[in-house]
Picture (cartoon, rainbow, N blue to C red):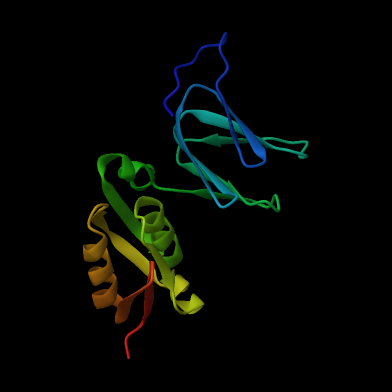
Length: 161
């Protein structure tokens, strides 16, 4: 969302169990299986979770994520990397592999799963074309000695034997 400041018209987004109130800004919101993430590119956004007395104000470069359990997780992110999807790119900077997979799964119909949860701790850096799913998988296979195997409607990433 890119919202112009206007005191007479409040812009709010309900995502999961929270209400986000724009304070004249540009921000992204995702809601995947009840896990919500809000990322502010510029300006500020006030987030209040249902049942919480306090609200959190996010500024440019900050992300807040939470799940149905209501646990809040705040962190700093690179604004260019977070907004790269708008220009058809993934930009990963020391990004955990499970976050890379989540990003790919948002953009492609065929899901990717990690065969071993320990693989989630690997970190990826690079710039990739969002449309080139096969190229990103090949890069992961090469960089980390992984193997992508298609089965049914899922691609599984596992350590190469």
